[in-house]
Length: 193
Image (cartoon, rainbow, N blue to C red; front, side, top):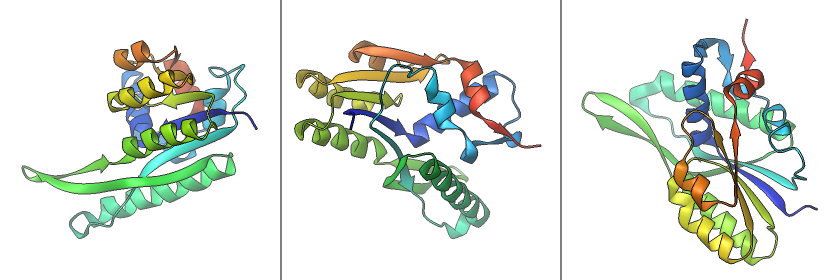
């Protein structure tokens, strides 16, 4: 099996996809993000990479009585997303938590812990000699120390980002950068009728 592994920070990924949809003027209510075709999206940008594993990371959702409708919506979305990704050959890893926090008079949901799990997996797989190339789809600068450690261990690190607001720190820290074009994002999104 290939030691090239794709690591996707789910929350970060969907935040960036939403930015692209907004920038391109797409009606996000007509896009079914839980059915996004990641294999189609990654096919051209990662052409030439034989990917051994594809891992998609998300945070554990909790039901919040104060935001019952939103909680149920997020949980349904995550279940559908999991089923879609598993059907397409992705490992679906739940790490960290999504917590509700009161900010002024609003309740805001914040994800914590996914970047830590990704960093631990990157280093752990490297130490076990199970990682030759880490393909990292995340724009989280908190991963830079793990990337530096991988490079010290002669693991190639490829940053996969978005042409809309790429992370310059990750582009500088990694061995190679691949950016999704907005048109590729739009093409991979399933539009509801």
